[in-house]
Image 1 (spheres, rainbow, N blue to C red):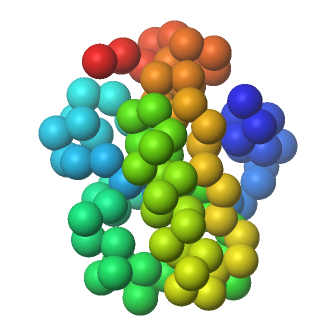
Image 2: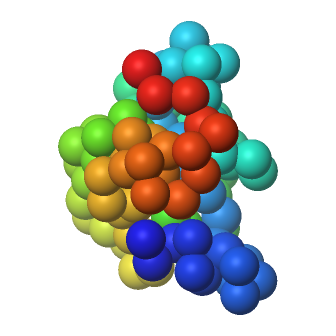
Image 3: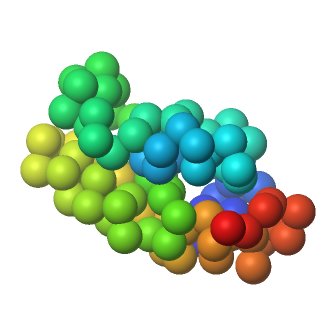
Length: 99
């Protein structure tokens, strides 16, 4: 997964997890910020538009939507973690719990 390679290389992108708190408690990527999708219009206003962001959810659907919303709000460097937490657990870090 591209983000895993970027992360190992020291990429400063901010990882935002847009799932619900109960999902985050089950499994998350270390260093991720929990910012639920249903609150995006609140927390997006507090983000630095000049930073890079990688968004993640369970399978990549909600985070893809979050990317589109942020892009519509003027953010230029946002990417979706394809396959979400499930793909991360399968292909990058098998110690991450799948649900």
